Image (cartoon, rainbow, N blue to C red; front, side, top):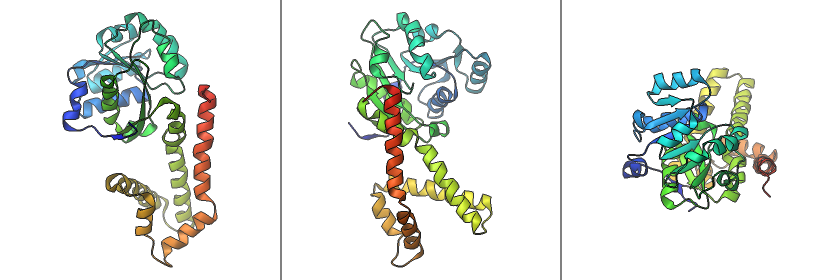
Length: 285
């Protein structure tokens, strides 16, 4: 169950013929809708978006051709799958508002950070299937990393729908809810760690005379390529590191400098600190 899910080909089936409603048309909601359309998983006529921002709705309608409205309850009534893509402080009040329109055969998917499955389920009087997802910012460019957790009433078919949706905007894994705080500390906050590393390497190259734009292109492609090698080869990062490290060479000199500065311990501490903060914010232990 802790496995990586990569939907291709026949794996489109969980969403076939399903109408999907997105409550919230902001950056992440828009990215999910666009990802579904880009992958050909759902036609525009079967996608509905609600938001309080009329300008945003008009933009999504013109750009993507999806149905838009300011009435979230209307979206819930039409949809088979409902994605809750609003800010955390708005999530529970909105769920309580649309709860009377919910049906047992629907799947509700929440990406509201810090809102637990128990809190989400408490908004409904009936045992409505709820799935919680922790995505990250690169979903906006189709390279996200998302983790999915099942609620008490979510069956396998509900999970398959959620996994298929988030596979449309990157990679997706399935984890128990107690581990979502760790996911937040790792991949949720992870892009910021990567940006900091990129900035440091770029500045290091500029210090030695390389033009900034040249350094930016070289190190960002290097990070992208290295990550792709890990994903596509399935090799342990340590093995791939050893493949480019020759005895007494330049890479070994650079690695020694990083290890001497405690970079590995600092990375571990970053994940731990972000995880603990996520636990504090969600009220989990």
